[in-house]
Image (tube, rainbow, N blue to C red):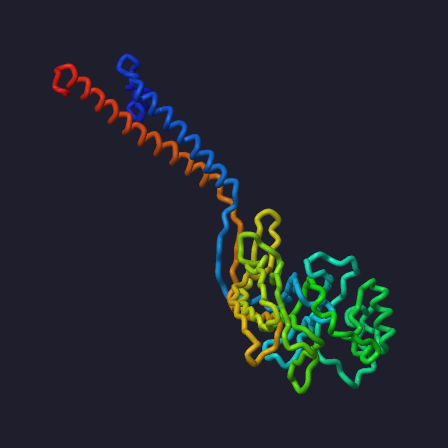
Length: 372
């Protein structure tokens, strides 16, 4: 026996002679439909192969050295910028955080249109200065670490060099030199936007009317009106970089309206979940944070205890979520393509046989006249 004959016996795909093949219209229809399905499924599989998959992982967060960046963009529709204080405090509430900030206020009219004026550089409350120190604070406008502003003029000159507008009523060095009247408090709106960088620990920040100061570990705002309308819109709030598929900015676009002549206290309790996003394109990890929020508003018109304002309290979860982009291997893509081709052709062959057998049975009954 020749070697070629031995190989022919191993052929699992014997060829049928054309004389014994019967081509039907039903078989052609099944072939066209199955080929179309195969082409569509392979195209979808190719798109899935080109698109990276996102793997999710949960583990204990050990990256405590990273700063927590708070990006904020909030509009208060009925309170002027000069009467709004932005303060940041730690979780105990009795000491202020050391924060790096870049926050500006933009004056608006009551219709929400911006007034053509230089944005006001906001002064965020920080830890009380040491009274024994002879170096006055420049409130973020210092040239270097040794630059001191001991007089009101020194602070104003430093802000002038930075081309920042300044709220002189918030400057310790300018106390008693400049006065403001509370009559203009409700004639304008204010948009506050920028960012804070704080230590990764539980804390809070708030927007409240009046000048803020501390007396015996109590945080107080000096404001003469009992009813303060705090209608506001949270244009953006996030704790890190924005990721579209994650919940890094669930409060964006939230608008809260308040009835006329009604003071309310708005509380936002935020649970922050640290998030690591590893993109396959550049391989650079992105450290950001997702968060969930619970809202609560308190009416202060019935002698309820509290202070009118917008308060954000946040705490961090000890767990971190990791998203990692991964590309499927070509072997996985080829295996899926083979599965699609084999599976569709097998099912199509079964359907073609059923159709042919059914049609032949119907024809036989028609021939003998048994089909009514």
